[in-house]
Image 1 (tube, helix red, strand yellow):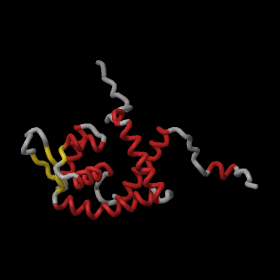
Image 2: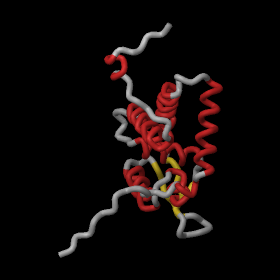
Image 3: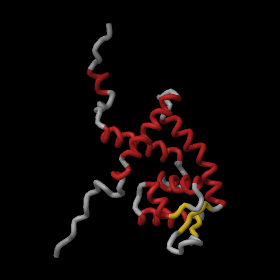
Image 4: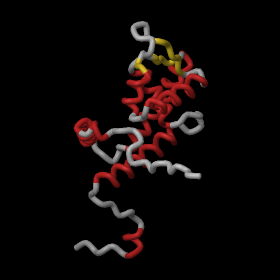
Length: 169
């Protein structure tokens, strides 16, 4: 017959509730830390690596499309691209069909960096999900995709942030 946990055993685990938003936030923290550890020493943020990964997987993606894929607003996407362009990792060019559109490609340096980092990131992701069996990992990913896809209208950059208060003189 199982014994009741001692007070010490009870306090070693963080209590989790079956509430989607707090669990999702906690999972985001874990994912962000795992990604940051994979990129340690690279002078690259997890979001900047996300830009490299999207541009690598979809050459000539435009900045507006990139913003939507990353879940950031256009201004932040532009700032991310500016920083990566300054590092010589991304090249921006004007679209031949619409001069207002900026298309993105990895530079040879950006491509080499992505190729070097991708296995490290993949290893971190695999380690993160290692508690699940292969079939469970696939099911988990498919469920995440389904929940996100069904709620895409709620994916608005900046939602929930505290508004800056205006200073009245």
